[in-house]
Amino acid sequence: MHSPTTHDGTSRRDRSTMRDYTGTTAIVTGASAGLGVEFARALGGRGANLVLVARRGDRLETLAEELRDAHAVDVHTLALDLASPEATETLVAFVREKGLTIDSLINNAGFATHGEFITTDPARLDEEVRLNVGAVVAFTRAFLPEMTASGRGVLVNLASTAAFQPVPLMAVYGATKGFVLDFTHALAYETRHTGLRVTALCPGATKTEFFDIAGDGARVGDFAVPSEVVAVAMRALDARRTPSKIVAGAKNSISSAIARVLPRGLVTPVTARLMAE
Ligand SMILES: NC(=O)c1ccc[n+]([C@@H]2O[C@H](COP(=O)([O-])OP(=O)(O)OC[C@H]3O[C@@H](n4cnc5c(N)ncnc54)[C@H](OP(=O)(O)O)[C@@H]3O)[C@@H](O)[C@H]2O)c1
Image 1 (cartoon, rainbow, N blue to C red):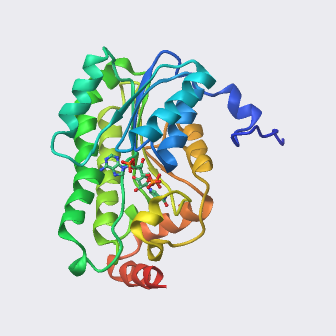
Image 2 (image 1 turned 30 degrees about the horizontal axis):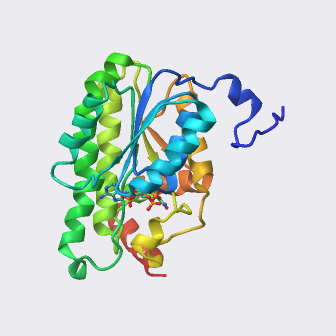
């Protein structure tokens, strides 16, 4: 039976099973642009109080005002470089100082370097690993005890379809996302009896600021719309059993399933050709 769709792409039938996050608190990293903005809107729209983190504090404050007005939720903002060595200490201190207990964490901040590894700025590569991997591990470790004790929230780590095979010309990015994917699968298992829903979201190319930073040559396939990618994730998180990975888009689901099982010697040159197009 056809169920009518609402403005956020969810159907009326989906809405009846939508989880309520009222009274919980969620951290969204990278909430100044792209998918992070949409996660903040989606969780705020379902009643979650929010801690929004990224470097561009002016953008975070604009979003915070929008969400406070629209949903009457508490929204805190923290302008912070999450790749810096003191990031975890600063974030934890901020949360404690505000007297907050964290139920949900969206480890979303991330970026890619595109090009030959041998000529890529080593400082950018270091930042990429510290943000895409280091921050994800450190923030998860810092807040997992209270998130599992609460059992009312979600841990979403942003992986990518780049996680399913080596990615020449984005070698470090692909490897960081492969780490995030397997790390998240393992954590989903370790926390399976706690009520915390744990998943790795794997979008394909999505229309955000990501490619302005990585460079256009990094794009493979058509662009998805960020609000739709987040709606897919929120629906999967509503399910009775949350999958430990969510691949956004039917085509991406098929290609990533194939890429995962193909021998690396076969899939790597194919990916290299696609990246070079
Ligand atoms: N777009 C895609 O095609 C795509 C596909 C698969 C996976 N992903 C993943 O999705 C996540 C979100 O990406 P997006 O597409 O939404 O990209 P985006 O539009 O470029 O947004 C990236 C966010 O990360 C924040 N960020 C970057 N470096 C930071 C740092 N050092 N400290 C704090 N915050 C930092 C940015 O904020 P500030 O600049 O204000 O700090 C921004 O809010 C990333 O993990 C990305 O790898 C994206």
